[in-house]
Length: 368
Image 1 (tube, helix red, strand yellow):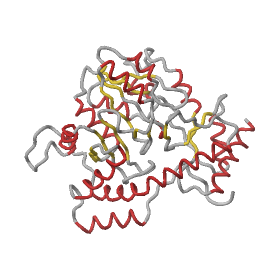
Image 2 (image 1 turned 180 degrees about the vertical axis):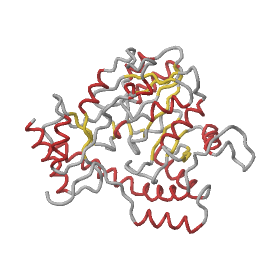
Image 3 (image 1 turned 90 degrees about the vertical axis):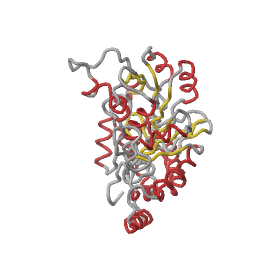
């Protein structure tokens, strides 16, 4: 294919987003104005009408949700190691310890059986991650949490609009968290959202994001400045309008790639799951992943590895001696880190680009 290389992702910033940002800038109400509230109300329609609390990033969403849950020193939170580091970092930021559990091979999401085996007397919560846009096994995770009296915090930062058995992610646990980073399925330049069915919990979150204040200078609790700007909210509102059609296009692109790629393992979708394909992640077995990625790069096809190093192998989570904690037995996590490769699936891909990607994968992988 002639022309520019195909990137792994292609963020969208259209005229509607630019006009919305300019409109807010000209209004002079750029923080704590009406756009954030409107964005929260509109986003709530995606999560069965739950309250939405907008913050400045997906990491802040996780962090504040854990604070509002009362998680702190001495507590343990079960998380998958196969995720972005923010999932575990948020647990550490409140003084608690992440306990890593393995993933399911098909979905790349937290394995409920592995989570069950990781429960100790110090466990207070489970944090499933809806990785790549595929929902975790929330029916089994919620049942597990109920049996043991644990809270569930959903990391839905990659899964806007995903669902299981008709229930959207972000509407299962005490809270759900979303990210609006530029490469996500929708964005606000940068930002995040916490969703919850509990009105008092939502109020606590609003206090926490705004220095503990609901009324100016009437601080009720210790809080921080993790507010979303009105400029970001205005961009997010325009993006949210387009999310349904973008999701359909991602699913259509994934379906095409599924039908054409024959040389690597394409991503399965669990029964009754709605996958929104933040990433289209294949498995390259036989130790050929890096060679395939290099070959695709030569052809101008972008790809990325999410994630080459599981969290439990990152420096902050090693033992005091700098070793991997031998308590973590995570075979599916280790295998995924060695095999996964995410291919372009973003909505603006052309039919020609999709064909070129599929043919490129088959050609390069077929030679390995």
